[in-house]
Length: 243
Image (cartoon, rainbow, N blue to C red; front, side, top):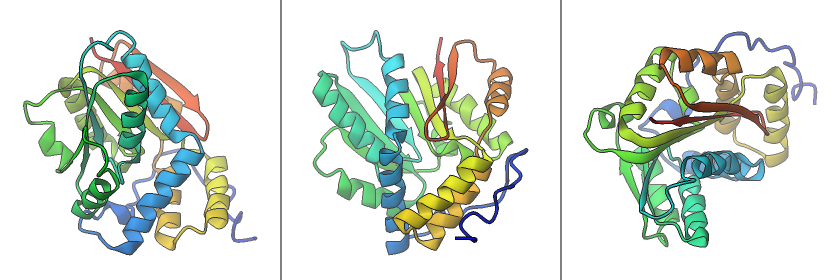
């Protein structure tokens, strides 16, 4: 247990630029599959999907009478898209859902898990190439993905999202916090996460955001209509309405 809480006074002043194992887009195999599924399960259990869904609801308040196209960037195993598909079916909404990830193995796994959903498709692609294309989506989602990028790349990506989203963007990402860092160690212990999931998760928290980071990006991107709200469990919801 000493090792569990040994690094309480971790420095969270600035965003870390340490890489994560999952940043290797060539990675594949059972360790990756287990990590993707555990991340999705923990995200669901801690209410993370609700943070993204709430943002989508806010953007779609006046758009319920037509088909809505939604792109999920860094979709992982597709759990968020399946939640949206179920939500749309329950509410009588017509969603056209697409998940994008740069890892081919991840996309293959997501396709298998989503086999029963005829309105979900997946694409293995580099998002920086995608934002150069003419395709436009109503809503772009970025759940637990934005923290993987350093600030310069992050701003480039968000500028691309502004051009490609006709209604808005929903970012759901980690709050960089020493308390979150310590609590994640406890989660690793309780859920028996593999070493890759544990190490990447801790690094992700240190690559996460504080409110002033998101406000700084908002100013640099010249965003006019947006929400930035702290959500449990140690998340920030950043919803951008495209004018």
